[in-house]
Image (tube, rainbow, N blue to C red; front, side, top):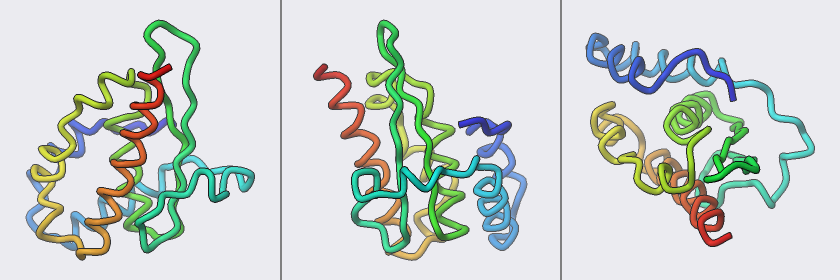
Length: 142
């Protein structure tokens, strides 16, 4: 995944955006930067369960020591696609240990998403994190 924005830049941008409409637009814009996901990956094997929207996460484990895990991902919903982009900024290209140690709740809180996302989107976000962490757990076991 090649986003030209880092999670640190997003956190900084959100500090200056007072209006939540602007923040939603920023999230949507992040989602628009995601590369297209090949249709061959839009299968049950890669679908994130627990999301109202359709979401797919495709892991790619590098043959390095320790192995790093990169992700391709997509969603059929604009806001969710932006949330996917945020997760990729945090997790993609990291080792399994780094993924498991990442403070995603802290980032979620700093972005103030809990009070501005619907309960179903918040649950979907957590389902995506759970899927990523399960992939990292499996990589650690190997």
